[in-house]
Image 1: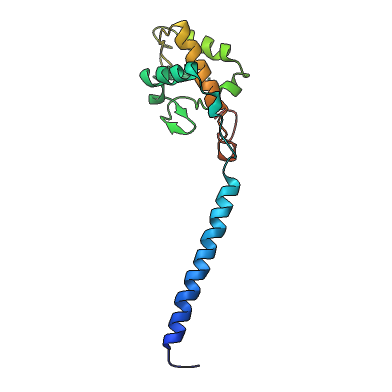
Image 2: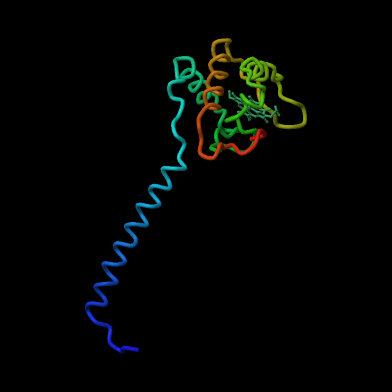
Length: 145
Ligand code: HEC
């Protein structure tokens, strides 16, 4: 084995490494673009959905729930509640409307928010919109969220 490490050997490692990792970078960039979802459903956003997001924020739903994984882990994931409730905005509205005023005795449960009919419709449409977002790898992974 040769004992000396020549300048040209160092140069080859330098340029060879640079080319190798640049090609690797391009390949991984290409791969990432293949697995990214092809598009979203922002054309589904309208005034009602926008009002629903406001209702969602003003009532701090995320203080208990997660939405597509973000939020608090106290209550069920709501990113797919529209699918879970049989693709029915009425079922969502009914659930939110029917919460007991004083909560379920003995445990912390979903409070009664006393939303107006307009706000109820808006929050249901907002949750329907979120359910339609094309997330990577179809997240949430199962119907329970
Ligand atoms: C204090 C915590 C808390 C807040 C705040 C809260 N929720 Fe809930 N929510 C719950 C809990 C707990 C449940 C599970 C059912 C139960 O125990 O009442 C639930 C269940 C639900 C469900 C049914 C989910 C399922 O799969 O059964 C929907 C829909 C829902 N909440 C919507 C909302 C919306 C919309 C808001 C904001 C306006 C909100 N929640 C705010 C605690 C909360």
